[in-house]
Image (cartoon, rainbow, N blue to C red; front, top):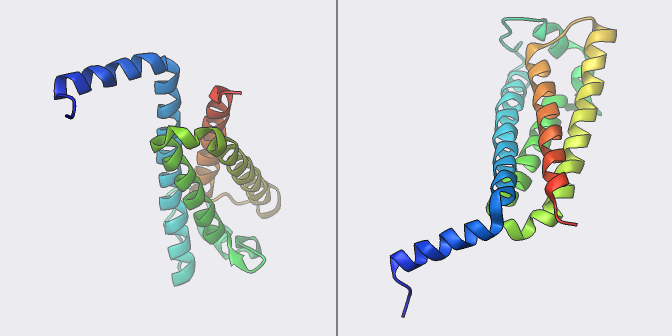
Length: 164
């Protein structure tokens, strides 16, 4: 016979109490990482759309058109926005799995960290190119760089909370 609803709620409350505040904090960090990755998907998706249509991205601040038209807007012939979109989608997948399945968090945590390190490093390189070489900064690219820093910080928080 299945447990009654009040008993099921009590069991859930006890299970949450056993997990403690760290489990809740860790789950919030996974959820935040997923949300940031979704924001990155939106930014990269917009930039890829602009690139595919061969139009300059709308830019209220900065020099998005100059950056988008530069030879540095592609890496190995692939638009940087496509690479960013692929990486953000991968991060979103890992973060959503980590947020919804506690059993995979110990193995997903290093994966999230590695992806965030790669994304932040590549973004830092692209930011350096904008500032030092092109002397023009794209606001969308700067937003993406900020998102990668936030993802890196969240991945460090998640990794530090991972049981050893």
